[in-house]
Image (cartoon, rainbow, N blue to C red):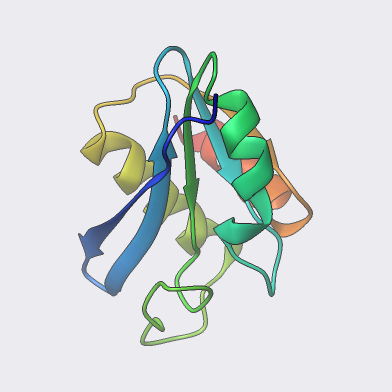
Length: 112
């Protein structure tokens, strides 16, 4: 049985970030590649949500997130990831990053 995937937004100083969340259990954060969005993980989210709390976000400027006021760096994206994790009360998570998302995951790991 597929778990429903909820869409929500996080307000940041540079705009709103769309994120998708589903399931319960240990958190798993999915970070997409440029120029895609979290929609590339929809099928995986349904599978992972059977045993995990799965979160996928659209980086600012991509998908349904707002366009940032300046060109974002990998470090900027990492700050927004950390802000989302804090908003959701997640202090520790596994991260699966695809291409750009893998670089952002590395920055997140350095900062938390």
